[in-house]
Image (tube, rainbow, N blue to C red):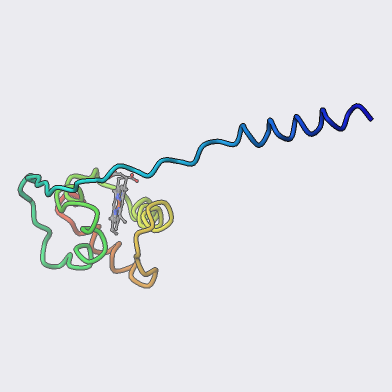
Length: 109
Ligand code: HEC
């Protein structure tokens, strides 16, 4: 029966060790910032509009125009990777058109 006071003490100790409430964050002052992006120097051919629609939200035209020459199978894998790994909202129905456009880029000939 001598354990009851000990248990009570342990419980009291546990209560006292409760972490203090997180202090309210100090007021945050948001300020406007501006950055200057490098100018876009490359343009995709007009026939590659499907790439503008599906790729240039994330990539510059230059990025697409400086890729090494890849075969159709590798480009198909790339399109799938953009969709699965990077969550690009590319409609699978557009894959054949995107592939055709990629294969006709100047750097792919
Ligand atoms: C939602 C954003 C997003 C979209 C849309 C997107 N990509 Fe990507 N892509 C990425 C990210 C992130 C990477 C990895 C980092 C990098 O290389 O820029 C990448 C990498 C690449 C690479 C480099 C090789 C590799 O596998 O990492 C190629 C080539 C590429 N993308 C082509 C494309 C093409 C072609 C399209 C359009 C069909 C496309 N991407 C659409 C996000 C995107």
